[in-house]
Length: 99
Image (cartoon, rainbow, N blue to C red):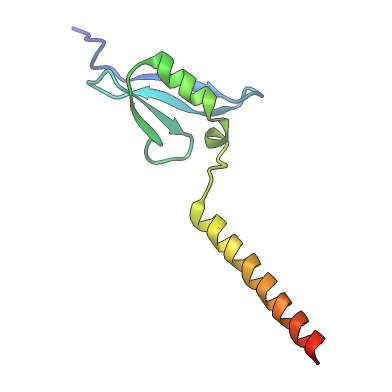
């Protein structure tokens, strides 16, 4: 007997150019959906109640599918580098002006 609730269901996600970027997956034995990007070991969004909600969420965040996630740690390091560089430049100009 085939119970549709126990079968995992996949729905492909394509970007604007038609390239495959990931899947919307219904977990085995559940009615909840998750979003899985190609190349990831685990979903980046779980427990989505309906397939329509999962499709809407997938369309809402194309940058996640493209692999351009915002990385806070990397952004903070970049910011700290430029602040340090600017402070060093300011101190150097100050000492050059004083002499």
